[in-house]
Length: 124
Image (cartoon, rainbow, N blue to C red; front, side, top):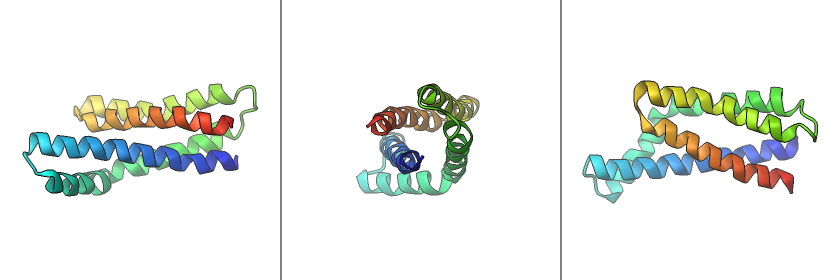
């Protein structure tokens, strides 16, 4: 369980980096910002505007860790891990489609990558 909680930080860091890089590229491409303006505006976008995303992401991640992964045995752990990935991803996929904002989908892709990395860390 302790390894699970430590690897949650991996999810947060990877998702933040992926969403931040996407935001910088988008700001430079669509708003014709230079690199510094793009980095600053992306930081504001990801941290402040993305507050809803981060709060919901943390809550879903913690709830699924407590209720799904904690109750799994060694045999069912990876099935529960996939269930956690689906449960956390579905609301953000819906928001991305509903609001037509690709940043939610990019966040989900970052989460999927971080889950693959995290599963390798937990196995070891």
